[in-house]
Length: 358
Ligand SMILES: NC(=O)c1ccc[n+]([C@@H]2O[C@H](COP(=O)([O-])OP(=O)(O)OC[C@H]3O[C@@H](n4cnc5c(N)ncnc54)[C@H](O)[C@@H]3O)[C@@H](O)[C@H]2O)c1
Image 1 (cartoon, rainbow, N blue to C red):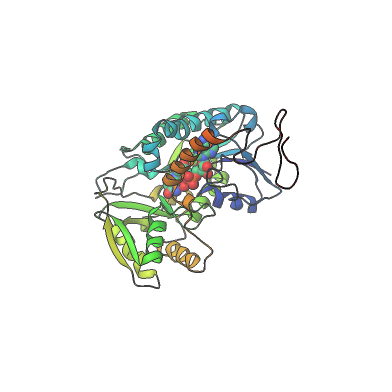
Image 2: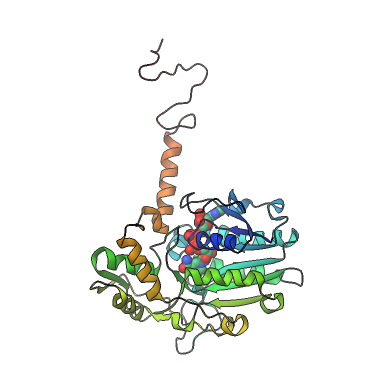
């Protein structure tokens, strides 16, 4: 039984990936700080949970593992801009360190889930391939690129390293994100019949279903090493390359209600149309789902009440809340508690109806 070490395992992609790995018979160690809640992974005899920071992974944590899938990250552009130093530490430095430790520990395979956002703004006439010059425009995209540059040279015949440049992901996950394009558009349509569309809707952005991108990760665990070693793969499908207005229209058309599209925000400077020929030709993989499938599924879950937009489904807002409350709690807590005090020497504790103070 192969043992897979997954970081960021309680995240949007991780919480879909882990049950798949367990179903396929892998043993899994799932590392996460669980910033978005500890309830995202279901207990399983082959699952070990490590509630730990990725910056403190030790060599011994990785000994005995067969592969690492290093999902951990501050996972979008606005969060990356607000927490720049931390984003570089987690997304770049920690992942580079984990890859080096994995190699030292004798792990055979390391997969870095990066992002197509490192293409930034590109000439849209020709879909860009993995060999195109990158153009990372944000802290998040630059950290991904630096992580790629740090891990790829570690590849050798004993250590298979593969980079996945994922399209923007959509679809339902136990750690739901409504800050992703398809998911956010679907929520807007469900909530008030309006799809919010970042101006001017002509920007190109590739999309992939969370079930499809996690299938690719599973595929890479078993693929021939010589096919994937030292390689970068764009992960998505040709039909998943959308201009955002076209995407909004597809979603509006598939939903069972009447929907209006409304512009918001400033012009979006990121636009990239991506070639997914390599993954199709080398791995024979071409995806299963469309944005319409993902949107309809989310819409139905919202409608039947099994899915809700809770505060932690917007990544940036949630990290801001955590930082704010961390400060407040540090200032106000005493003896490890908030309102209740733990009994200690020299302090007479009484509870209503039990003992009066002397
Ligand atoms: N979701 C997308 O559209 C998308 C697209 C392209 C690439 N990616 C990449 O895929 C990966 C996973 O993305 P996601 O959507 O699942 O993000 P996510 O924010 O849902 O998950 C990231 C997880 O990492 C954990 N984490 C963050 N900092 C940590 C730390 N210091 N130590 C331990 N755990 C920590 C968080 O608790 C969270 O569970 C990221 O690397 C992201 O950049 C995502």
